[in-house]
Image 1: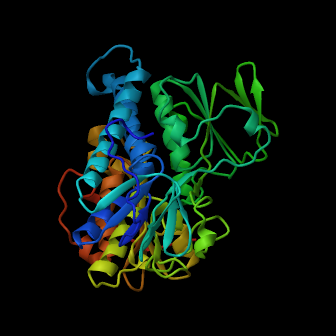
Image 2: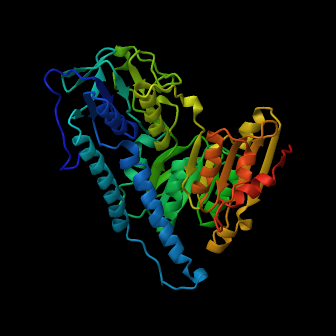
Image 3: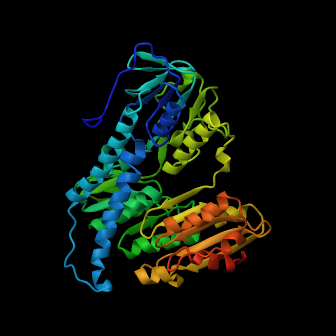
Length: 467
């Protein structure tokens, strides 16, 4: 439900606009602002919470929770740093209230920004297509020559034996939890599941992870997966991989998750096995808008759908599953429509982070992906135990790795699993985005003492890849 002070409106009588935006996630409000500046009359439609996943159930609250968990973890290590704070207990009510304040402040900021634009109409309701240039909201038909779909996604909940008969959480309900689980069972060993697993372990819960693949975060290189597993297990998290055919049932002590000879009994269950787009109830067929077999809206390299005058931005187009890629979708569309540019999705270098502690920062290809290309590779790897900044902070888990093309001397990808890895990766990401040879970055003079200062050294140590 919208917050009590949220500006709201109903569609104007004539229902004619220059542009319609469906959804207020990361791309929507920013696009509304640019179109408004260009003199257009804009309708932006939201059926639930302004701000989308990032603001309400994703980045904002989860990284706030990660920060609280990090503070508790550091306090418990006080003796290592020369201080004593006594037994550490976590007040989950305060933790949850802190996350909720971040959510409400960000949502309110978005709502008031949209409300401040005279020719932008924030409409509360569920939009469904009624043709290629029209949508219906609560019985009112709105038309525009330009329609932008920005409806995001939600947790995928599969049809698994017994799951419908037991209580479970997804990322959306997990961020609102105000109590500490006795034993949290996380089904899914990828980004969302691992972040929640570690934070709740640090809050004081017993935690078990069940992953059907043979290793965690299977899209990453095996050495990354192994290091992440070691980090989590060192904190007392039970990790079960290769767990298939899971079955769920009520148990006297909570919920049973069984697969073969493995059975885990938990008080709370988190399903974190992927996402699905919010496209199944938009009436896309009435507009002739095509989707793929998973429900993602099919778009070209400039984010146009199969219907002229309709674009899809953010998680619903399958071209990126992050806040920053959604925002870049807005930038691409705005540049092409309003600035006379020819920006394309294929021009951006993939980059993302896994926010366990220490974080994993990633750019471009993994080493495995680069090897599949068949090109001659250069690879360099350095443990965080040899990074001065990590040693000084007492946070030496992980490593830095970079992969480059031996012929073009362009960086193909990098991974920094370690303290500050989510920030340090940007020097590499920027070099790749600028399409500069690695030698340019090798001769940079980074600041000491930082994690980034080791990147030129990492590049100096590049050597031909071995099988």
